[in-house]
Image 1 (cartoon, helix red, strand yellow):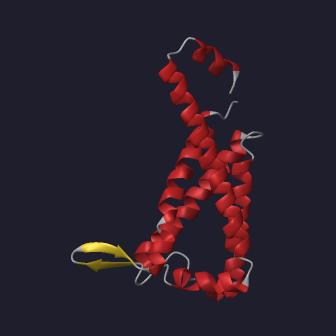
Image 2 (cartoon, rainbow, N blue to C red; image 1 turned 45 degrees about the vertical axis):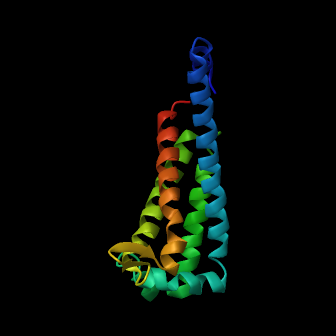
Length: 165
């Protein structure tokens, strides 16, 4: 919290102060929740089991399937892991650099746009039953990325709003 924010809150209503505190806690949990998730799944990408586990998702993606011909299964997984770890570390730098956190948040947005696109490209991720979409196993695994995508936009917005802080 900076001095300008402190002065503004001094004369504000209790509900404005509570709103500000809720927003602060929410953005902090969103930011470092993203960091934790990306670090955990990023490091997993260096295991053989995870490389094989994500293969069906990537192999059916029109945006990413070409990478297997260039890097192979473990190479693609390792590249994705490196990107996930890098953007996590950039997002985590928010107390030191709003610019780094903003760039990392943009990386998160791209990451989660790609992974949510797997809901459309992976066979069986979403199935129709009685006219309603029902998530298959892959869809149940991927649906969390919609929330992570929203958190990515939130952290990008907050960092952008504080680029001079």
